[in-house]
Image 1 (spheres, one colour):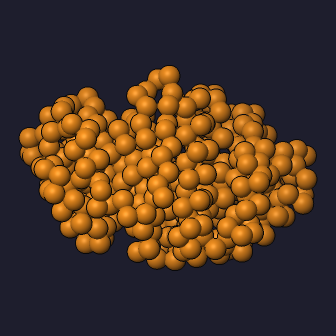
Image 2 (image 1 turned 90 degrees about the horizontal axis):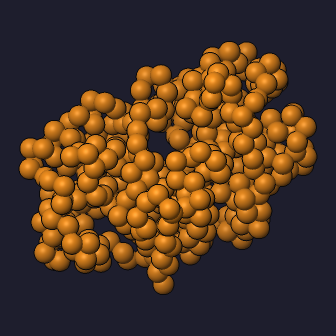
Length: 368
């Protein structure tokens, strides 16, 4: 059975997130119903081989004129060079403002194709077809698009909401186990932010989703999208409550940057999992959270096969991590901003984090 979650807000056109199984063959009809012109499917080389032919066949069967544009797989494609190449190909294809981009892939493809759509002809429509768990529960919903720079992750981008999101649970069957676990980190994050009962389910009966159980995955995706869509509807541009969705990300992005965004060493989801565990332990150090809650978060994260300690990833300099965190896009007026927690399911934004306390904490966590 399919579930449709509507994303609505005062600053953007409402759109649907369709979640279910066997949705890819129906995608042609859904895109044809949007009444767009030509369609360019942006995907990476790996996903193109797995799902490109089926998607193109579905589009052709519904009379949608489409062509494929592939990019290299991996975080390296979120770059100025690849963005320029994608936009140049769209121009060469002769697209105009009535045409459509379909982002078929994980978060990298969704971010890159979404930003290209935001910039091309000052903005054309695009559809998200996320093929990873991380993208289905997080990056495909909410309109954040971005590329990386050598100075940090997602520092250049735009808010550009999709026309439609189609999350086919069946596509997750092709994911390597490590990528599935990486997406599970974002699922856990949603429970940690505002739904303790959801986190309890994820830690118990629902834990089989982390190893590929389709029914558990569908329930996890639906609830995650419900949580994210409600927050995005209240705060599209991250001026308030939407910042809660960054739980674990300030720590995580700093760690990723120190590792050169090398996914062989650390995936984005793994960085978020580690960041969430660090955020809860720092909340304990700051005196706002009980140690038992942080201990449970660490236990659940580790049980899912995700890193929960800095030592699980490698040696780090506390000053290097602090410098990275100070350059995070959530920092304001030179002050560090972190998402902390009073308890599981009760996160909050702290815009005045004490640097000395954070430095002491990082050293206690094992950074030099």
